[in-house]
Image (tube, rainbow, N blue to C red; front, side, top):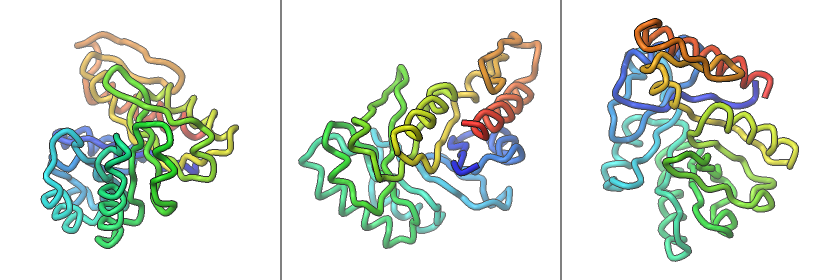
Length: 216
């Protein structure tokens, strides 16, 4: 498997423990407590709450937690170009091996430094933006969120188009598990709330996602 699969969420220690046991790497958003020390695993990713953050507080946590991957705030307008590049360099100086930036307009990818990973916001009802694939060729790409189906299809499509997906993060199966629904590796299956424990539904989804990504 060449794609790093990261369970990136906060606020639920038990789900993090299950995901790690099933082979996921681990990450959290910056405004949640990470549990990596308790599990004896590296903190692979720290996402940013791009709607509510204080950059000095974020960088303080990055310096303390030492993740492999960290995000700059979403790049939404061309006038943010210098700020975006400065923040990416700051993350690099803090020891982040893979600074990531999420472009939100056509032409934005060309402004993101070559040593950064381009974070693609997989379309959902919450958010999402897919840059033209021509902008992504030759770049390393991370898939931010979305459903397992959408991520699998993008990995396959980008592979055919010469775009390298190096990592993904996902946590949609967390909410589904609370409704008794899990991802089998091919489709969502609903067993009904109360007929399967939330932990078991979440574990089944983790297993299904890992199986699906092995053949994506």
